Length: 182
Image (cartoon, rainbow, N blue to C red):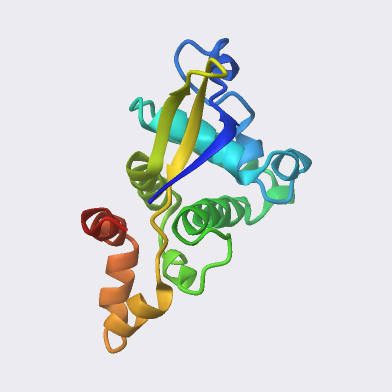
């Protein structure tokens, strides 16, 4: 099912000053859940920035990772990479379940930041969509809404925790939902 949100315009102008197609806001805005910047920008805007770059095969991992490495050198930011990993897991949960809380999100705990980044990019490439609203003369974005049924997934893997983790740390469920047209 396509979940169009007409009022969400692609702000390609936000990328105007970045011809190399990098994130238009500071890395902290996307990964530091404790920061003012992170709180000020809603999750769909951040996901739209990621999606805009992801479908254009522009990598933004280095920007985020450089920020993590820089902050992690300061004792004041102890646990900063875990904070960043939590943010990435929240983005994945939001795309998959419509909320940052996901009853099966424990599977992300053992993943590295890079693994979470790659999973997010795969999910974005399957879900992020741009289209023209010709009446308003604007380009809009939407996310294809393939909602996970966590109870059904947990039931399928009730005796196989390793299989459940492997399944949820991939994009297999999203691909299954696409194939089934759900």
